[in-house]
Image (cartoon, rainbow, N blue to C red; front, side):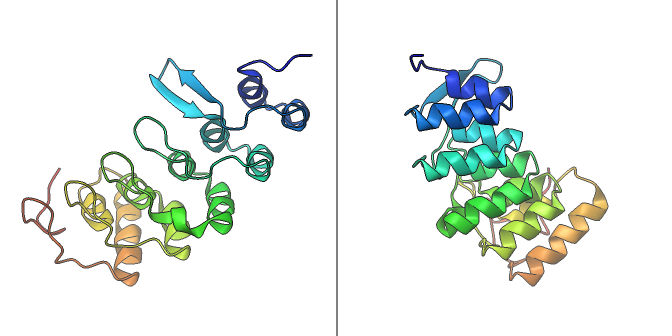
Length: 188
């Protein structure tokens, strides 16, 4: 059977590990990208697998040479997809393989820690900080994870837990964003 565009994607969507493994062994392009018309975005098969929690497929892709820091059109990385879908185990795997990706930023300067902090994802924040994420990383507008957490609409208990974790990790409450406001002054 001839390899065609989209076969890896469909195997990942169907959670068909054996087919996925067979396609990679036969030389399928692990860097192939896919048009996600629903979300109007082009992403790699690694993004797809990270967003769906397909750990074994992710390991197969990485073992076959897939780029761990590949970005979609918004600059979001597979690690960011893991965070958005709360797959911390996969985040651990990615960061164990390449610790340098922990502070990668998207087109807007947001890191995985910004995303986790903004959405009240306590376990993701804990995972990222345990891998050395920089607590004071600033977005393009100067926002730190502490700032986005402080104006987050997430559950108040989660916000409080994340604020404590960020402060324990050395976050500076006096850092200022582009309008010279600190975490205590920013508002949604």
